[in-house]
Amino acid sequence: SLAHSHKLKIHAWMNPYRVSSTKILDPASETTTARIVNQVKEIINRYAVDGIHFDDYFYPTGSFDDGDTFAKYGQGYASIEDWRRHNVDLLIQETYQLVHQKQGVVFGVSPAGVWANQTTNAAGSNTSAGVETYYDHYADTRKWVQKGWLDYIAPQVYWQIGHAQCDYATLVDWWSNVTKGTDVKLYIGHAAYKTGDSAQGTQWMDGLELQRQIAYNRANGGVDGSIFYGYGALKNNTLGIQNSVAAAFQ
Picture 1 (spheres, rainbow, N blue to C red):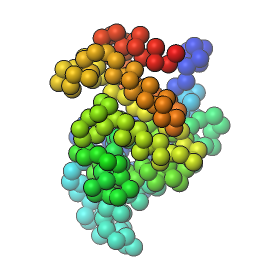
Picture 2 (cartoon, rainbow, N blue to C red):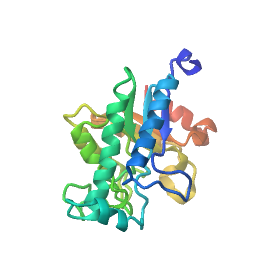
Picture 3 (cartoon, rainbow, N blue to C red):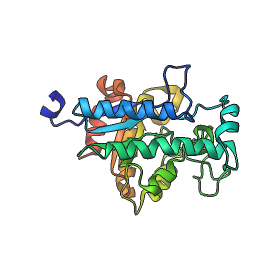
């Protein structure tokens, strides 16, 4: 109620399968899905939240010991990879349906910025990212948009404009094409935390990269808003980004 009195909306941010930094629930388990959905139900019924927001943790990058589970429950799927994506699809569908039982509450996801590289999937972006959500997290985020299982998607486009492997502009264009013609809003996730970090490259050292990115979003025309990670850089006004970000929205 305090946030609402200041005309702020609150979205509950959840890492659906991640219990801790080292422990991951099995996405194939019906118990896991029910547990997460029940947690969402408790949040929207007990608290006056405006949205449920899933972070980018789905299947963990790397190996996951579910061969026995696939042998038991994976009949009808051509591969364990397709079966894994189906398991995550079910969670997204059920969460969307539950959230929409509560008027005024929305559901969104902030996945890693690259669905797939074009070199591994013709429908992917012209990037060479080390992590592709479709193949590494078994999260078919593009499908979720196409099926309308989200109210918004907020890909973490945490690279600068002109980045050699993952150009910010290339990814914004790709995502805006994915959401075009759908009812799913596109909010771009910006790497505010990189501001002032010399290890990230010179473009993050003038305090204006976020301003340039917001300007690009506006010129693109398919972007509905921005999300900034993390709050510390904005709070501390690193390289004066409070003013540069505010100026970008004028």
